[in-house]
Image (cartoon, rainbow, N blue to C red; front, side, top):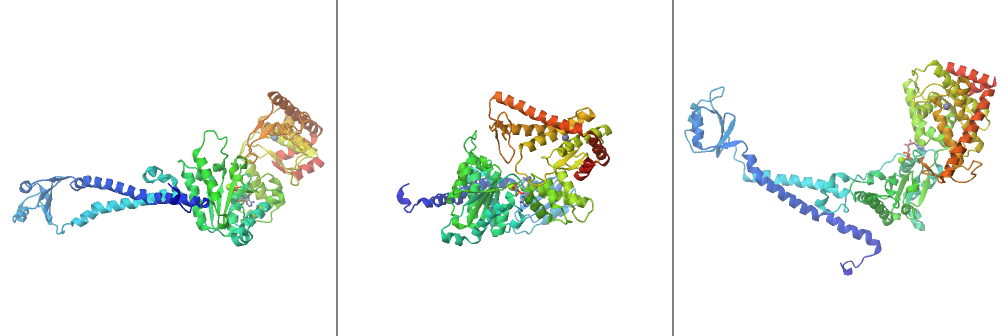
Length: 631
Ligand code: ADP
Ligand code: MG
Ligand code: ZN
C-alpha cells in the first residue's frame, strides 16, 4: 500500500478507515462466493439424487410383460398417463411405456383381478404432462432459493455478532449460533430518581448527566466537556443498576444495557465484536445511555492474570478503543457498575474513560427509612413505625430492604390481612435474617431450658453494660436457618464508629450465652458455636486491623481483600507474630468471659425470673425484659 491511495488520511479518521474495508469484506465478497460455492454443491447433489428419487420403488417393465400380467389376472390398478402406464400388482408398482394399443381398454375390462370387485381399476390421467419449465423450477430453482434465504439469514446473524472481527465468510460458519448479539435499547425506561431512595450524592452527580442529555448544547456552547463515562461503585444491592436506569428514565433517552459477562464469549474476538456493535448502535440512537453492568467481568486488571485470557483482554481493549473513539458531544453517556473497583484495569479509570466515580454506599438510618418508604408505596399498608424497622436493619442493603417489605406483604396476604402492619415488617426482618419460624419443631423441655438461659445470658450481659446496644427482643422460637433462639440488640441511632469499649462489651455479650449455660445449667453446648466465631473474629480484628491491642498498638497486621464482597484477609506478619496474635485474641476473649461471668453471677435471681417468663412466652420484647430487670 502506498501513501497516495489515502491522500486525506488523518489520525482522527483511523476508526472509519479501518472499518470500511472490513464492512465491505464482511458484507459482500465472501457472501456471494460462499453462496455460489454452496449452491453449486447443492445442485450437484440434486442432479445425482433427482432421478433416483423420481424412480424410487417403481420397476420398469416392457409392454409385453404388462399385458401378460393383465391376462394372468394379477394386476389391481392401472393409471394411464400421456406417455406411460403405471400399474400395480402385488405390492409393487411398475411402469411401462404407453403403446398405441386400441385393444387395451377391452383387455383391461375383460381381465380378472385380485381386487374385491374382481375387476381392474383403471383411469386415464388427463393431466397435461408437467412442463419441463415447472420441473426445472421445482427441482433446481426452488432449492437454490431456499438455500440462499437460509444462508442470508445465517450470515446476517453472523455479521451482526461477529461483525468484521469475526472475519470472513465460511471460516466462521461454526460460530454463527454463538454470537447472537442482542443489542437492545429500552426506549421507555419508567424508573425515576424518585424510585431510588437516599443516595443523594450519587443522584446529584448523575443529575448533571441528565441535564447534559436533555440539553447538550448548553454545555458544548461553553466548551465544557462532560465526562464520557461514570463508574458506579458499591456493595451488591445498593441500587447501582437501579440508579443507572433512573438516569435514562429521567433523561428520557434510550437505555442500552449489557452485563459484562455477556461480552465474554467462547470464541476469541466475539466479545470485541459485541462491544463494537453496542457502540455503533448507540451512536445511531444518540442521545442515549450505554450501561455496562458488572464491568469487572471484562475490565479486570490485565496485569497479574495468570494464564492469559485472550478473549477478555481483546474485549477490554475494544472497549477502551471505543471509548476513546467516541465523540463525547454526541450525547452518549456511558455508565458502568461494579462492586470490585480495586480489580479494574487502570486504563479504564484514566481521564477520558470512566473518570467519574460515583460511590453507592450501604444506606444509613435515614436512607433505610427512605428505601422502606419507597417500597411501601407499592403495597397497601397501615401506619408503619419506620424508625423501629430501620434501626433493626442496620447493615442491610437496599435490595435486602426491598425483600423485607415484599416478605411482609406476602405474610400479610398469608394471614388474610388487608394491609401490611409494623408487626409484619418486624417479623419479616427476622425471617430474612434468621429464616422462617419452625413452630412445630420438637425440642425437649430440658433443651428449651438451656436455650432460654443461654439467650437470657446474652441479654443480661448486654443490659448490664452501659456502652452496649439495648436489647430489642429475645426469642426461643427456632428458625429454619438453624438458630434455636436469639437475642436481638438494636442500636439507638446510627453508628459509624465503634469504640474499643463497645467492641469489648460486644465480645462479653457474645460470651454471655455460654457463661449462662455453664453457671446455671452446668453444661456447655454446641449452641454457642456462632457466638464463638463472632467473638473470635471481632477480637482478631481488634488486634490485627483496628490497632486496639496494647501489645501491637497501631501496627497493621493484616490486609483485606475486596471491601464490598467480604473477601478473605491475609496476615502480613511473621509466623512468630501470628502465634502471638492468637495468644492476644485468646486473652481478650477470656477477659470478656470473666466479665460476663461476674455480671451473671451477681444477677442470678433476675436470670431465673426472665428465663421463666421467656419459657412461658417464647418471645419477649425489650421493654418486658427491662421491666423484669427493674422490678
Ligand atoms: P446493585 O446493582 O447495586 O447490586 P440493584 O440496583 O440491582 O443493586 O438493586 C436491587 C434492588 O434493590 C432494586 O431493584 C431495588 O428494588 C432495591 N434497591 C436498592 N437500592 C435502593 C434504593 N436506594 N432505593 C430503592 N430501592 C433500592
Ligand atoms: Mg446490579
Ligand atoms: Zn448465643
